[in-house]
Image 1 (cartoon, helix red, strand yellow):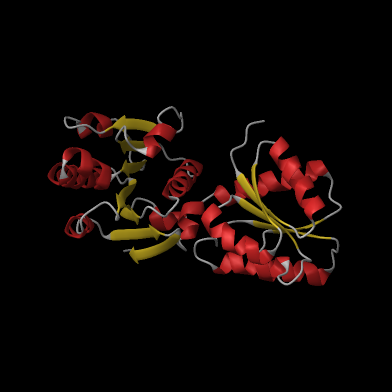
Image 2: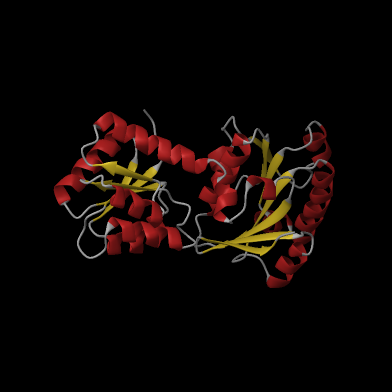
Amino acid sequence: MIVSEKVFIVDDEPDLLRLYQKLLEDHGYKVKTATSGEEALEKIGDEQPDLVISDVVMQKMTGFELSRGIKDAPETTHIPVILFSVLSRNVDKEMSLRSGAEKLLSKSINRETFLEEISHAIEESKVNNFSVRFNMSHDDIKNKLFILEYDRLSHYEKLVRSFIIECKTNDKEILLLSTKDSPLYARLYEQEEVEVHVIEEHTMLTPILDEKNEGFSLIFDSITLISLALGFTFSYELTRQLRKRLLDKKATAMFLLNSDAQAKEEIAKFNSLFANHLAFKENKPEILKWI
């Protein structure tokens, strides 16, 4: 079984922590750990796991408090949380619900059910995960063209991945327009779920777009990389032309822009082309402009 998801486990009992870690690693998960809620909160924002599993009863910070801290922070609010407890009282279930945790499980749960719950929680979180991170629904982003401005400190590739999953979940065909230098190109060019086209100096948009039905989704990766490779004028004109064609096709499209590597005046010119503008800096999602 090949799994690429990352799980973060929190427990102040080292033996149990090692037991959970080995079980999950044996089933293909990448695992990070912490022995306290305080340590977990310090690490989870940077690690950006697909799931957090935590004991409820720990010294100082409880699992309920940890879950609330995860859900209150913009950069981690999207991460699902499973809590473990030796108790299953109604008050514990209520406190778990109030903390924002997706599930409260008994520590006596069998291994097979435990693994099923983990898989289910991760898969459930992927549906419409992109729009949820910006406090929107899929209908809010459907048929919209927008810039996503990110910085070097952000896990933007993972955010893009959530956009792909959301669009595929909503039965949309996905196109990636990219350069061969892009990390996204390296990850996606052999993936059947995404149709990849390389942008070069003589790339023609018409053959790529004419065969597409209305309502497909597109990722433009990226305004910045194309500016660096082929010049600002080329990138700006290509973005302008592509925007017009996508409006005609009623597409949903995300145009990536690295604010750390693009001049401010150039960023302003690109932003002027779009009515909708999102930011993802230091892993914090933000709506800058949305119509």
